[in-house]
Image 1: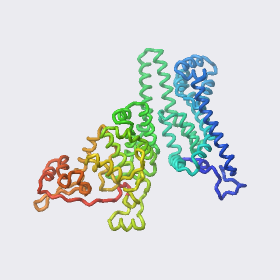
Image 2: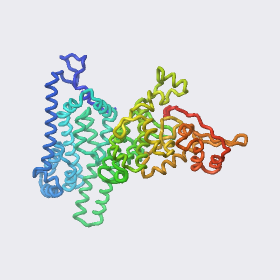
Image 3: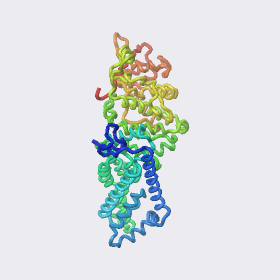
Length: 536
């Protein structure tokens, strides 16, 4: 279980605690105005300290040593100095405590001391500086930030909840990704309700792989510049490959079956960071389709929870929904102007993913689903809806609940007002309403570059699923039985007459012949609204 600093969530003593005997970890209550002024004053000091660190790094001669040329001067000066390790560790730790970027110093440590000693000194200095930054942020910034946000802030409640759920292992996952800004994580952790020993342990373990790889890279680069030997060049190549692999460490662990709670959020951070760097698939998608989210983040949500179709592991999702919430936040941050300027496939992929993500959110918000009471219970009973159906949720499809592209939207708005008017009936085989009879979720997001093939694959899967489609011969007459959802939305297929020719394009052999035969009957399979839950 994650360790949480419970005093952070409730800085004031509990009302029932006697003023003369404050609860453990709290301080006696003080008049609100002086305390507020003190908290804001300390926050101002923290801001000035970070600004000072920036100015030192950019406006003073000392900052010159953080440049590419300056680090070579530092390397040459320290290499023969008897106190080189002490000076280096002190300089590195101080820079980190002042939020000065330390990557160049890590590389310098490898160049000065070689791989083994460089890793030790870099690791020691980074830990000292990171813990100093945490203590500074905790002492100067936490109360001020919480005062500005308000102790009853919904954002604070979400933050406290995330820290409580993920704590050590969530922070450890972020520490393992070198693309996550080191200094931002140092100071940001100090503002969160996280115990120092939890932070220190996650930092101690999490930065070791990155420190070792960066140190090895610097040492190999130096050797390669000094020796034009084959071995030296191989070391440089290996170091470069290790740096690339380290950036995708959480994804690699997942491929190997090793999963840390909170990893989905970490993969999202890495994907977004690589997108900002302008590399890989994320950059290609942005170029081709406007500033849209990288839907690989949704794949990171789906892959661990989508089991044997059509089942979904909602218990796992509800236990760790940070990656889902982060992806929906990315959907909400999408500029509608950029979205409307994107290609039709990019728009359709965006909204299909949005519908499915919002439906997962709808279930996770109410999981485990309980039988409704009052009039809704009577309505559901009359309609024959199961006790664990999403219909037990009030206004499940009509209620606005999910922020997408700047507006809070309902499932019906996304489906009927946005997706269906785009005119592709294959969407009815892709969007999922969290029921056994829904076309199942797949463990990957829809993407503009592969959308046509993905939608065709979903129709092929539909006609090969006996729960959705069958052809039976009784008394010399053939009858096609198909999911009733096609009857509900028959106008999207050109009416009842259009359903059979549409399905025939995706159906092989004799079944296609049956669909094309006007004498073949057409019946619809009743809809099973039971929640598509692995634990049902």
